[in-house]
Amino acid sequence: MSNRVTKPTVTQIMSTTLRNYIEEHWIWSQETFGPGEHMEGLLKHIEKECNEVRKMPHDIMEGVDIVILAIDLMCRMGYSSDEIAAAIIEKQNINRLREYPKITDPDQPTEHVREEGKMCLTCNHTKSEHTILNGCGYKWPNRTPCECRGFHG
Image (tube, rainbow, N blue to C red):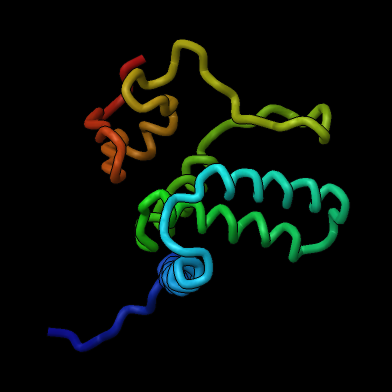
């Protein structure tokens, strides 16, 4: 038996730090703003902060306001710090797998290429995402689990 301690990965360290931040934020948010979803109010606040970023595009604190509000929104939707941290990392991994078109207008959204007729009918992932993810099998709370184990398109 080895007493050797394995060094945590950067992803594990970031996830732990993010989870701790989310937990501390959630305690503060409930103490400051009270319980409840506050869905519409938070979405309007995010829109307001987006406009502030447009006015001050190089002010990092304005951009961070959007991140903080989005985290608060997810907490108020009922997700735990573990679920939020895992979802952020998983979604970015999915985004990295996607193909994106060449940017022709930087003032317009650049969305991933959607493979018409080549999307999983169960979870809306592409064939390439399924190849890497080995089927989705997501089991997020408050959502119907996707039990597909491969490409359906």
